[in-house]
Amino acid sequence: MSDPFYSDASLYHRLFPDDEAAVDFYRAAADRQGGSVLELGSGTGSKLIPIASDGHSSTGLELSPEMLLEARRKADERAVAVEWVQGDMRDFDFGRTFDLVFIAANSLLHLHEAADLLSCFRSVRAHLAPGARFVFDVFNPSVRLLADADGVRRTRDALSFEDPDRGTVQVDVAETYDAAAQVTRGTWHLSTDSEPDFVVAPLEIRSIFPQELPLLLSLGGLRLVERFGDWSGRQFTGDSAKQVCVCEAE
Image (cartoon, rainbow, N blue to C red; front, side, top):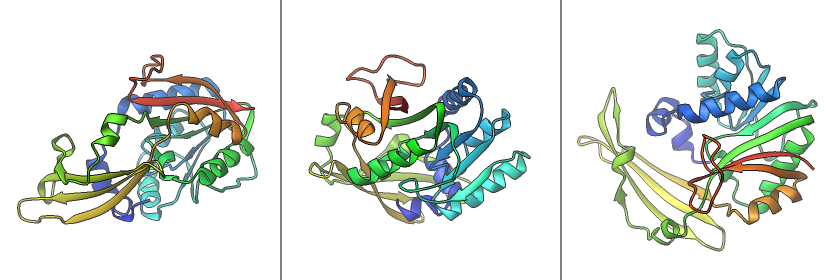
């Protein structure tokens, strides 16, 4: 995890705004399952708070204390009850099971080592009630984009945003791809005309390829039930941008 991204919740949300289609998808998943919900890597609660507002008993596990503080503030502002817990998705024990466990927004990809992924999956498996589902989304790696990660700093116009205090913020990214580790190692630069590089932050994200994902899940005691290519439930193909996965205990 990169502290500069997760220590300033307001800056994070301007850089990575909420995806309403993703929120709707996870709310629908919670409604189908009924019962209790656990989100791992819950951030500031952008998905879990709406789920809790629908009447589901909801728990959020998050490593960053700053993100948790903002999640509590947002939940209190909406008078929504959520159990917020600081912890690591690689190894956790609530002593009870849940009807839905989910990890959203590529958060799983902060786990770079296979051992960490398996530890997470095994912890998830131990927390699934009978008939429960484990749902998560990760991007579908593009070989072309990985090959283009040459370390050159480039402006990402689509990521530029307006900050109420700073004005227009330009986002530049320089990335390389470590094929042996399957990790993209990036340095993100946030700048304004008057304040160049006011944030310079590393961000390292693992790739999980479609063929290896079911095997990793199986080693963790889970079975892939469905895999979608987008939030609408379209069938996953090699050209899909996302892997939206629905799993159950083996």
